[in-house]
Image (cartoon, rainbow, N blue to C red; front, side):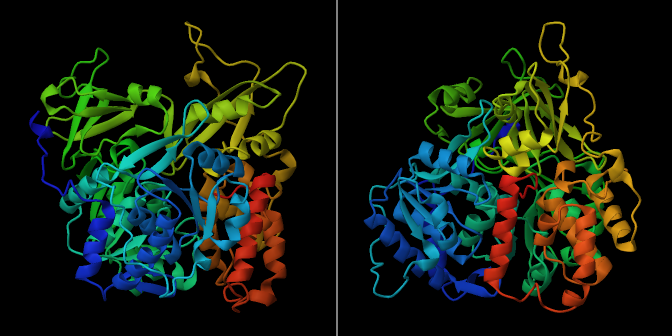
Amino acid sequence: MEWNRTDVAFECDKCIHDLLEAQALRTPKKTAVICRDKALTYRALWEKVRRLATHLRGLRVKPETVVAIMMDRSLDMMVAMLAVLKAGGAYLPLDPAFPAERIALMLKDSDARVILTQKNYKDRVAAASATVIAVDQFEFDEGTDSTETAATDQDASSLAYLIYTSGSTGTPKGVMVEHRNVVNFFAAMDRVVGTEAGVWLAVTSISFDISVLELLWTLSRGFTVVLQTGRNGLAATGDYSIQAQIVQHRVTHFQCTPTLARSLIRFPETLSSMKLLKKLLLGGEALPVSLANELGETLSAEILNMYGPTETTVWSTTHKVARSSASVPIGRPVANTSIYVVDEHGALAPIGAAGEMYIGGAGVTRGYWRRPDLTAERFVVNPFEPERHDMLYRTGDLVRYRDNGEIEFIGRTDQQVKIRGFRIELGEIETVLGAHPAVNEAVVVARRDRADNPQLAAYVVVKPGLSVSQQELKIHARKKLPDYMIPPVISFIGAMPLTPNGKTDRKALPDPSLDSVQSIENHRRPSTELEGIIVGLWKDALGLDAVGLQVNLFDLGANSLSVAEVATSLRHELKRDIPLTDFFEHPTISALAVHLSGANGRNGNSKDHSDRGAARRQALLSRARAVSQASSDPTE
């Protein structure tokens, strides 16, 4: 196909760290990474990388060795990632906010030999059968030899990173990405984003593969990377908010999900700062036309819609968004990528006809870690151009080619969904809920809320003679699933509706109801002006007509992104700082209003919460995480 003629030469014999080290030699004095009030030049960063890599090699880290990284976003996290690659290993990102069982499962399944972490997380991985190193306690002194750290038996086909994604059987599956896949991706992004170095504000967790663009491609091309700390971009305040970071560092490039972009432009200060951007990349979930047009009319930045599964290395197609669009396609294949639209008979679908997207090219990864059956099912030999001798990945995405060669996304062939950029197999949630002793059957669907954002909704049939509450099921699920996979609403029904052939009729399920969460007594009118303000903000954030004063907001679907959004709005209304942890410690409107009223004199315009030190802030955040794992108050 003409539209698949995307061949471009790239450094196919190089590893990721080869390119990064070469850039460090070219620009040793340039600032490479900034995190809050600390920074490293390319030379200083790479010297730390060499020393830690030498230590890892001494621990027998070599090609195909998996090294786990469980760290908060920091300069040390960057050093850890690069050192694993330099030593020859493959990094496995572990989000500290994940449930303990999920982290333990990934560590066991991956056979991670070493865990790089921070001192405050050492206890959480103490039981693992691996060497644990707290990078923030590692001695990067000049006595550490850093002269020879390269893995002599490593090549471009070696494993670079292992990222686990949701699995339909209830168990996450690891995607194996090689160095050559990533180096090809770098070459593709050169043509999509451009090679002129700038300043990139990086907000994405390393557990999400689009961080590879923000943290690795950038450093191989001479960018300065500003690390946004916290669980999401909106959580930071003051000098480290997204708005402040963009202005202070003159940020030129920014990448996020459409959900985060929609939240950001609600605030005038942040929207004003985003007008400084030259490039805005949106991906991880569908980009609504209304949002694309709003951004296009407001910002002068080039806006790019990005699409790609982890199995084909970050982004596989891109589309430059026009200023006024009737629709937003996912675009055309990037360099060295081919796209085939396949009908139900396995033949190429005509232009304009819908079919499943198959992706081929240099970005197609090795497959799934220790899952040969699943790899054989999803990765197939190219039957359409056998002379290419390549593999295709079956995405499960329904698309169609337009007459102009642009690809339009239609939906899914299975039960996979995207929620706030996270890929979720609904079957994994159903398996976990169904494992509760009182549950006979569980079905999970994705429904769009009033703001057109996808939300999970669960339906449960309870076993005869037994009972279980929403609260109990959420606590049960939270032991195995991260917050973004916990359905805000769980509806109890007598039986699942069925199609004529006996399958669950998901379309016939009733609209999820919050009646069981918001009882009549929780609908009393606000008794103070502050309660009224908070109610209004939460109604907007959750897309609800009413929010009870006594109801736990996390039972209504609140998550860390909506909490940060409401917190930002409330700071504007009250003209004072409000720590994000207050929302987790006081999860009802009534309790939060009482707390804020009592705290008025204590922290009105003072620096009580913002400047008491990292130890106290960390303690509050840890408490919020603990609450989330043991009760109904989740954090993302």
